[in-house]
Structures are given as C-alpha cells and as structure tokens.
Length: 299
View 1 (cartoon, rainbow, N blue to C red):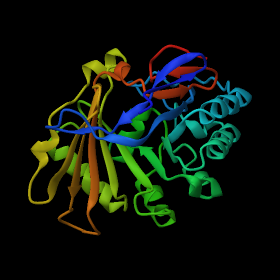
View 2 (cartoon, one colour):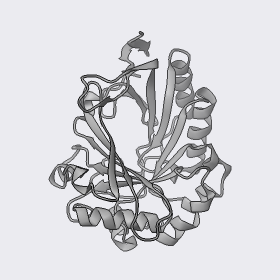
View 3 (cartoon, rainbow, N blue to C red):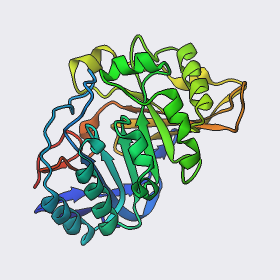
C-alpha cells in the first residue's frame, strides 16, 4: 500500500489506516490511501480567548489555492475538504471561491464548513449551503447571552438556529461543535442541559470538544473527564476510537432526550491532545501550505 506521496517537493505521509477501536493495536487499512485538506482562514469577527485565528487579515490568494488543489488532486485522493477559520464567511466572495474550487478539484470529497454563524441567514439562503455535506456551527453554550460573551460578538440566537432546521439537506447536515471550557459546559449536568437545548432547536448532532493546548487560556481552561460518566438509560456509548499514530481520541454516543423526544441524537467527544502528531493533513492558510495544523510551511 502506498504510504506517502511527494507534494511540493516533500514526502508527505498518507492516511493508510482507519482509527483503531480501543483494545485494538491498529486500525483497519483504508481501501485507498488519502489525505484531508483544510482551509484555515486567519481572519474572524469573533475574539474567542482559546483561539489564535482572529486577526482581521483579508489576504486570500485564490490563484495559489487553485494551484495547490490541482497539484494535490493530480497525485492523491482528497477525501475531505474542511473549510474553517477564523470565520470563513467573513469575506463572502472568498468563501464562495473556497467552496466552488474545492468541489471542482475534489468532486467526491466530503465538504464541511465550520462557522460561528456570522452570515447564518445569508448562508442558508444561498445555493452554496446545499453543496456542503456538513455545516458545523461553533456553539459553546446553550444560553444565547453567555455564548455571545464567549465569542465577544453577536452569534445566531436559538430562534435563528431553529428557523433553518427544516432547510437541511439531511437530518445531520447542521451540527453543533461545543468547546468544553471551565466555568461553562464543564460538568455532567451542564452537558445534559446543552444536549436538551440542542434537541429543542432541532439539531441532531453535537460534538463536545476538549480545547487543544495551543495557548495559555486553552491550557488553563482545559476540561477532560471521560464522558463515559454520562452513560445511563438514555446515553449510550457506541464506539471509542484512537488515531493510528496517536495525537487524538474520539468517543461516539447516542442520546435519547427524555423530554420532547424527536429521535436519537448523535454525540461525540473529541480530544486532540497532541495536534503536532497529526500530519496526514494539508492545511492552506490563505497564503501558504502547511503540514498539519501547526506544522511547517511546505509551499
């Protein structure tokens, strides 16, 4: 099996194995080696204390972006394109280019967006929303006011989120990504409040994410308790994964709300404890290509 590929004059490791179920020494081999491609725009309307991607730099090199995607797609399969930030929709024309060019060069990839909801209504009134397999809304508290305080800007209200639930292309297109932060969503009781609120605004998929150790705030406010503690009559563990090669772990669950039950909800907990070890990912930051999320510039 092909284990690496030459990209931009560098030998780059490929994803050759699926994540391993706990108790197994290694994940099963993938059918076709691949890489994941992330677009991380380093500009944002928010000023979250745990994030280092919130400068207001509108630099976007669309010509280089196209060149990079063509170079990679000519050599290896891109399984996933994840557009993140910062806030990708801050500069709308750039966002449309990121999306459309990505699909042009990797038409069979999973296309996902991570957003703080800056252009929430505009996004769902545009045909571009239907091109996304997943739209992940960063939402770190169930209370609208507290969530705005975390982001230090206005974020979509509960009513605005619920209003788009019927516009999804499938029941899990819109997903919440909730960072676990001390003083906010940090206990069993708070997690269940959050999940019940997500159910009330008709979202069926929730990710609970431990902060990555990228700055002092993240290290000081890091929360990790094994979410197996939540398991009970209406919270079931389905899978526990560990990345082949280390660096992160994931746990998958099903939650069945006791009140206002609409159907089972998917829940997962992700803990990326060593982001530097995850190197089968190519990241384009608007100007440069990096190896991994915080790795060296390779082009």
